[in-house]
Amino acid sequence: MLIVGIAGGTGSGKTTVVKKIIELLPQDEVTILSQDSYYRDNSHLPMEERQEINFDHPKSVEFKLLIEHLKMLIDGQQIGQPIYSYLTCTRSDETIPTDPKHVVIVEGILSLTNKKLRELLDIKVFVDADADDRLIRVVKRDLVERGRSVNKVLERYENTVKPMHLQFIEPSKRYADIIIPQGGNNKVAINILASTIEKYLSEKPEQN
Picture (cartoon, rainbow, N blue to C red):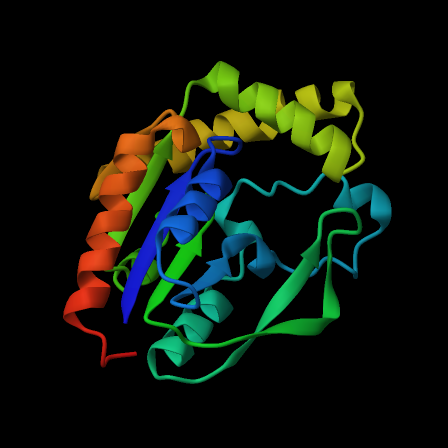
């Protein structure tokens, strides 16, 4: 099994990179483990407090469960990947059955910040993008997907997203084996990464 970690700032294009890599690989060879699924359940907090949660701080992620689930996949076991809602800031009682595959991609802004998680990754990738480009994507995404106002999005960006990026996410770039500038627009870097994964698949078809 090949474990690939893909990190990068909010709005850097990580999801696009993951989608394009999957498109280039044989069908049914890749399992996606999303860091976003492992945000802590906040159902015990009033809705007003949930709206102020700092999702860009490592403490907001239940890394212990994420690592436990990744180890289970490595051992060939199916997991129940959590379902997290940004609208309610809570986890669903339901989970997504997730099977081990030849390649597991762990994707999320903070996925290179945790040492124990990094130790399980065979390839560490950082998706890089200009701050202006990331801000534009964040505004568009949060307006449509998370029901926030423009003022709320900009306030969050200034108070949490930007400082957390500088404190935690940007420094994690130094752990990356591969850096992909321009996010999903960098076809050359994406093709190189996909080729590396394909080479692994061709050499070890019998392994899980």
